[in-house]
Structures are given as structure tokens and as C-alpha cells.
Amino acid sequence: MTVTRWLAEYAWLPGRDEPTPDVLIEADEGLFTAVTPLLGGGPVAGVEVHPDAVRLPGVTLPGLANAHSHAFHRALRGRTHGGRGDFWTWREQMYAVAERLDPESYLALARATYAEMALAGITAVGEFHYLHHGPGGARYDDPNAMGAALVEAATQAGIRLTLLDTCYLSATVDGAPLTGPQLRFGDGDAQRWAERVSAFTPSPPPGSQAEGADPRVRVGAAVHSVRAVPADQLATVAEWAARHTAPLHVHLSEQPAENDACRAVHGRTPARLLADHGVLGPHTTAVHATHPTSADLNLLAGTDSGVCLCPTTERDLADGIGPAHRMADLGIPLSLGSDSHAVVDPFEEARAVELDERLRTRRRGHFTPAALLEAAGVTGHTALGWGDAGRIAVGARADLVTVRRDGARTAGVPPVGVFFAATAADVTQVVVDGRQVVADGRHLLVDVPVELRAAIEQVTR
Ligand SMILES: [Zn+2]
Image 1 (tube, helix red, strand yellow):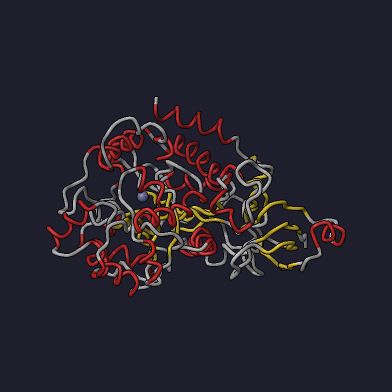
Image 2 (cartoon, helix red, strand yellow):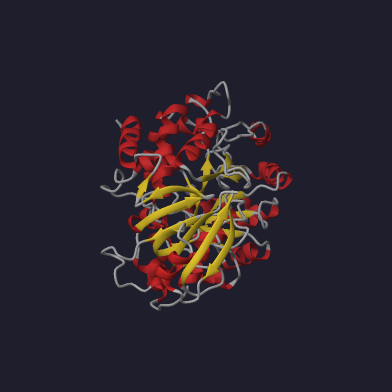
């Protein structure tokens, strides 16, 4: 028993509208064992009572989840903003980076990207992974070599990973074959996808997992989109996920063009098509859902599917604004993802959900700060299969994210205001599964700027 104790100046506890002052938090073997508000004793008094407690000045949040990531897109940040264009022209640039990656360079890029996430307060990432094979679609000796590189990257960066292994088979809704860089994404058909994924059983290296907690890596499934998985292949992916009680994610209605093509080919919307083939359900997360119909929203709600919003990417790619408030009203669980990593900042991602709604409606007050925290914390973790994380509560995984209140952006801000004032740069301490990963705003395992620069130079020069 090596109990770790922290004394949080403020901690945001489950079910509370705002952070609670003076909370003693204890953990053992990667799980919280006691969470005790000291009821006005004050941090100084608390330290006297518990001299071994690590003080956490500022506001301490539960671990935040990044429910939608494509790690290699990080290499595109700042390189695609000069010209005109839209999602489709951006995609050409993204493919150019994809063409250059191999397991070694992907490990370096993903390790630095995941470490950037840790610095931002992200304790678990859902990697929507479709860059499976070598140039031209040639299989690596280990056909899961790219997935293994991502697992290793997350382990080295100190955060949990759900590898959402993505089925990607066709180039268009009407089934055109993959060409060029897309050949690296394809397994041929869903059955061969399932066989490859079933053979992938990553085990974290010895000593890398918190004792007492589950491993830090999960494998889930993803349907890239109705564009990339033909209708007659969808059920195979859904059945694999159901058989493994694995999270199942799918890009949904990010672009009006996808909706139009799906209607033209299948006579129904993408959401309807997914529902008809068993893809929607309580373990399913639809990513984006920027352009759903009212019937689509009812389908998502009626099947208990979740939605992962990616507001900073959706704004960067000129996708549009998803109907977040209508989704919340229907009881659809909302999570958040940084997707293309134009920005990696869970605070910016969370407040964008509210602020975008304000722009659309010209009214304020659609989401409370506690609702934004729920999306970034417990709902995001649940969407990735970590139902035991995202809450500072006894029995939950011991993740803590501390935001300073003595910086230029947060000075004078009430504790409840962190989601509207702080940025990723205000995160000072991060604990994942009881292990400290970030201290005083520095990653303890990775020199993030140096490694990011080197890894990106390698795939963009
Ligand atoms: Zn995506």
C-alpha cells in the first residue's frame, strides 16, 4: 500500500455545479480510495492535518478525454491555412503526409502528439486509426505494425489509448475502389478487417500499467464513414464490436456532400443507413453529426448512440455547426475530440460547444460549465470504453488535471469559470492512473516541442 494524497485548493466533484474548496484526495494502485471535502478547514489547515499531501493550487478537474483523434494530422497544423478550399482540398494535403509515414516515424509523431495532449490535460485518447498498411497497400510483416506504433506512443506519452481500428474499404458512397494514398487504409473487405483486428492484442510493456487498474490500452472498432464502408459490409464491423463489447465509432454527416451522395445511392440518410445495418447503439459514437436531419437526431437518441463533437476542427475545415443543444435536449451523450489537431485544447473545445450555439441562436446559456466538464470528462471516457474514469470519486481511475488560477488568463477568475477562461497552457499538473505525467506545466517523459518539431520535419520536408 502506497497511498498518494493530494490536497486540492478546489476540486470539481461529480454532480456539483462548481468546484469544491479544500478537498483531500487519496489514491492507491491507480484508483481513488477517498475523496474528502475538508469543509472550510482551509488549505493551510489541511496541510497541517496531512503533511504528506501534495498541494494542488488552482482548480483540479477529473481526467479529460479526447474522444476523436487522428494523430498524424498534427503534422498539418498551420500548413493548410493560407489558401482557399474546404474539407476536400484539405484532405489532399492530409493524404500527402499519410503517404510518408511508416511505423517508426508514426511512433515518433504520435508519441509527441499524445504528449502534447497530456500537457493539455487529456488522460485518454480515442485514436480513429485507418493508416494500416504500407505504400500501395502492402502489408507489413506484422499487419498491425501501425496500430502497435500508436499503442507504444500512448504508453510512452503516459496516457491511456483506445485504438479505434477503422474499417476503410471504398473511396465513394457508390463503392469506387481505393486509389493512391487510400490504398494504405484498405483491408479488402470487412471480414479481412475483422481478422486483422482480432489478431491484434496489444499488451502494454511491463511496469507501464497501474497496478490494480485495467490495462491502459483498449481496442475498439470504427466505420470510417458511409463513404468508405459499403452498406453490405457495415454489419460485419458492427457485429465484431458487439461480440467484443468494444466501442464503435463512425464519422457521420460531417459534410452535406456525404448526405447527398448517400441519399442518391441508398435512398436514405447516412444515419438511417447505419441504423439499418446495426451500427447505431449504446456503444456507438457518431463523430461530428454536423448536418443531421431531425429524424437522424431521433434515431441517434432512440438507439442511445452518443455524438462526439469536434468544434475546433469543424470550424477549421468550414464544416458547419452541429446542433449540439438539440442533441443534448434529446438526451444524446456528447463527447469532445480534437480530430485534426488544428488545436489541442480541451478547454477551447468545450467552450466552443456553447459559444458556437450562441453564434447560431444569438442567445447565451445553452450549456452550464458542469455540462461542458461532463462532456470533456466522464462522457468522453465512457465513449472510449473507460466507464471508470472522468470523475473524482472513490473507485474511479486516479486521474487529476490541475488548472492554475495565478496566470494571466485565469487570475481573478472564479473557480467555476475555468472552462471559459483557461487554455491548455494553464494546465500545471496531470496525473493519469495515479502516476504524475505533467508537473509544473512540463511533461515528465517527453520534451514535447523538440519532439514535435523533429517528427513533423521528418514527414513534411
Ligand atoms: Zn475524424
